[in-house]
Image (cartoon, rainbow, N blue to C red; front, side, top):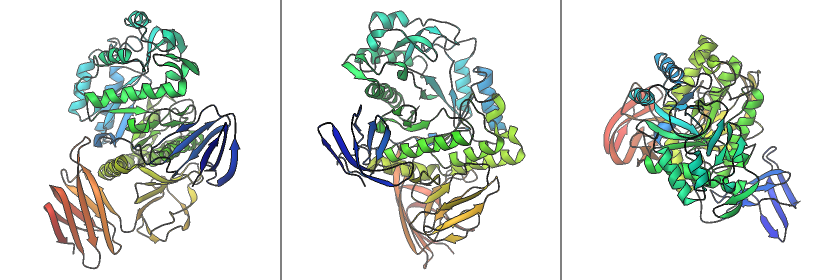
Length: 552
């Protein structure tokens, strides 16, 4: 718990050190270059010259800002490649996964895909039939997500055309930030759109409309704005880079969900490079990206994911195997995947290594099977994760809870616990959460709260526990259309869920209770459904809205 007060230019506070989880008291910090209150859940972020101090559970304001609802389809497996960057590479990638029995929910078409950055004209030399490709993906149940930044280029590093056809229009109408100056960035040189300017945003949206067609469901919103100065002129006057970036990310989110309510933006939440980047209430798939594929990169990504969760971002994904510089060993790749299947979404692809580096079947049969288990587990938990995010949307909070920065452990929702394995050593030590009883998923052994465990895990397993008394809504490919609940008895248990009606954001409420002594399950649902209740090897099916059944 922290207390904050401001007196002139001096700030006094008690805060929790996110690196040690220890309370540091009576800290006085001066020379603040930014103080930013984030009213979500009750999180507070303080940007100071020495680094970042994060506060939690502060009750800054009764006006809680909460994360949006993430569409059910997005709680899955998203793939991409950054080696070929063409239609053949994209289609080969998706087909290779599907042919081997891996579910694929979406593909990111990363840069470069357009003639020039960001003209939103498909480059026919790379994508001869983009509309046919996207249609083919949709026929396989795979949505398309397109990469972008806010720059309109006059010079490009790796595009077929240097200057965008719209560059002069942007300059002439002063649609750019920083007085529409053309500046260098990591993909060339161009003008960054001024997302505080309503006319510029309206024009930008008209450009996006050219490619946001059927089958395209979102944007991977990458960093370009970081190349603007620390402070620059906008339509609203002088603005810091930190303040401006919210306009950029918010505009992209607003566009996606306005055009398609089930659309998403994949955007950074907290980033160790830049701090907070996107608004909590306008980020429905937070992406902590651009890490190395080794253990150091994995630990760094976990830290960013955990910090983002503490700030109040709802659905936070894992970039499996990292993105750049160092590629993963086979063991690192799998441990990355095992952690990733305990987040909102697994995003797998990168430039760190050859095209095959992120393909699980190139790492051997055992690794391939273990990765497939991770994807299937990830997919089976879609109703559980969706319900948790709806709850966060209504009350504040995150899918990822109870984060421990030292042991790299967390809760997924309230009832599933994991600890990441972040070294070549398969023998790990960790503590279970300090409340409840916990069931080892692999062995069924029951442990008391707070127990210290030392265990060696084969490569196909990792620390995974279910709270005793939990009721977990799940899916099972062998029972399509069924509402499945796996029950872990512990006396009397009641859970209220927000279950997705389809692949989008609409839901209905359903309360499930189980009395262990009587062996009776009761359901009160806002909508009729076909239910399946599973306890161990026993199961019972029922249909309707109000159900009372015995499981014998």
